[in-house]
Image (cartoon, rainbow, N blue to C red; front, top):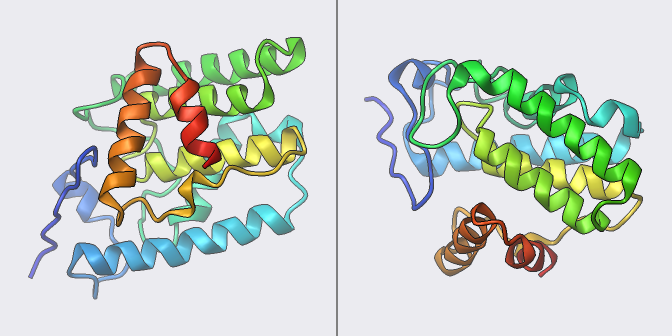
Amino acid sequence: MGLEFVYKDGQTPLEEEEKDGLKIKSITTQGELDEFEQLNIEKAVEWTIHTNLKPENILTEKFVKDLHKKMYGDVWKWAGEFRRTEKNIGIPWTKIGLELKNLLDDTKYWIENKTFSPEEIAIRFKHRIVSIHCFPNGNGRHSRMMADVIMESIFGNEIFSWHQSNMVKANEIRKEYINALKEADNGNVKPLIEFAKN
């Protein structure tokens, strides 16, 4: 019996060939998938804590891909690889490398020139990388972890709390998050910064 995905507000449906990338054949429900992914993500968090991440290595395509692979590599064969299909959100997949490079360059510029506060730099990065939508799946969680790594390893600050939530579960919190993302789409990153801090 194949996987029947139930999509929550703001989640991206997987293409058939992406579902084929599931490494654990015993997974049959979204709930089981969430649990396996959560375990994998916890391992990735441990890795970020116990690895001496050098600031100059973080804002690179390699690190962006490596972090995604650490987060999802136990579950998905395509973890850490840019998507090769169009989605209902995100830029055309052929432009991912270029747009990511622009974002990484912009972020380095913001850091060097103190264009924004550390919080705002991390959140602007998080917002833009989600709108690029580099990967077939897991972009939201990946972008939040990237923001945390930027806060911690580049600025030496506390990571964001993100409402201490597993956002897949809490509908109200998810709604607030989606609304904050929409505000950021319109150029106002303040609600997203507030969300990240609570």
